[in-house]
Image 1 (cartoon, rainbow, N blue to C red):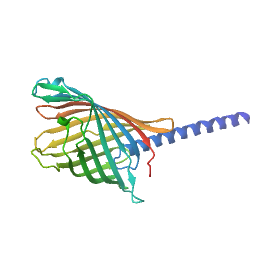
Image 2: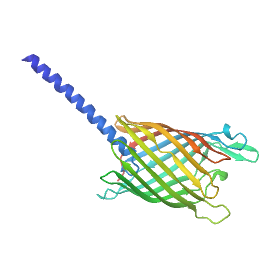
Image 3: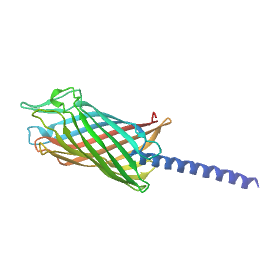
Length: 273
């Protein structure tokens, strides 16, 4: 009788451990899915570290590289019980090193503050897994180096995608125009495409590269990317980290990007509302 009792206790303990592990995996997988869904109501403090290499017809173009740190918090506001979230994502870049073409060759920008980009949109995911977003995208001329300073530019953005347990994919498009008078004109069509494939335990294969087409200069940039990310915990705080690489199959002829290597660090935080 005692042996049977011991066996039952051991069996229950093992079963409980397995159920806890299964719940933790399910929780990590659910969290990873929300973090990869741009319309989800989840707070993150995203930090991206980007290394880029370049090519082009300018002398020494293929010898140039850059480093940028970008802070992009995301603190969406759920609008009641509607399932619609108000999304605001400013991208605040700190340029650690950026090559600048001049008449005398390339110069190093050194440590600089970059132009802030942002989007503000309404987003939702339907019960059938259809992701829908629409709103405003903009660029603010905040660069500390005048030669790197953009113009005030704004325009519409929209996104559509599909969310399931097996894949997350979609595309975001925007069109921005300058709102300043003068000889310089800004008209840029761009956005991101994204795809993520869950592989279990909060891990994901996928990427979300940015593309753009400048209507004024006719420059087109299109990277193809792949990456790996995982959700873990630091103490009681969920944390996403990832590494991705993108190769530009199209870039400006004179000077444009070739490779982008991105490290992502994203603590998950409670929404303040």
